Amino acid sequence: MLYAVFMSASLPSFPSSQEPVGEPELLQLSSAEDNPCLRADAARNRARLLEAAALLIAEHGVAGVTMEAVAAAAQVGKGTVFRRFGDRTGLLMALLDHSSKKLQADFLAGPPPLGPGAPPVERLRAFGVAVLYRAAEQLDLQLAAQSESTRRFDHPSLRALHMHVTILLRQIVPDADCELLARALMGYLDPAMIHHLTRQCGMPLERLAVGWVDLVDRVTGSEPSC
Image (tube, rainbow, N blue to C red; front, side):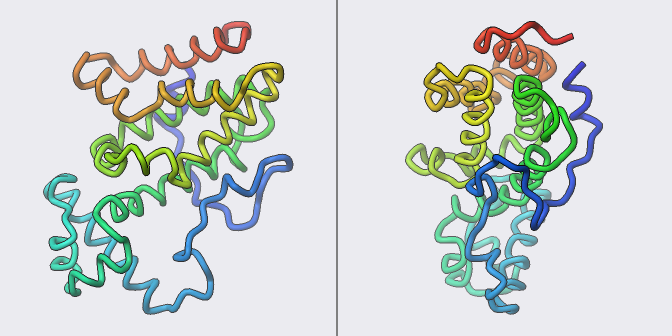
């Protein structure tokens, strides 16, 4: 089964220079923190704060991550945390950025079917399965980080995923409104929906993975995958 591939495959580190032909630069996350001109001490402070936040999550869950708790764990002033991340949502989103970059590494430059080299419909099937398993591993963090609807859809990582799906759809069904169709498909992969289906409805993640592949085939008019 397709989902089994993503249960066993390890994600590579985010590439710094490789980018498949035809993929827009928008798909690569960038921020002031990634700028090589960032002061070394500021970069170390940011890494220290994120490490402290990750340890708090491991020990107390996402609920244990507050700006005050992170500042105390990192032994810095609370104002330092606010200046670096803005607010708690900004801090949680920063924690998700690393795994977002690793996911983008796979669909930008990784091996097929998720990466370049496979037919677009196969890449779209693989993309959804990869997102499902990544979301399941970080579900509490994703839900906490995407709590504000006015910010969740505009975050660079989500825009990158939407753009990738749009590009694949334009190759598969060029006569469709692929931008809107991509948003509809991304709704299936929304962390809140995954939480509802897996934790409240008790559906196994494997069922969601199979359902995603079936949805892609029906939406695009493709022959079912083997």
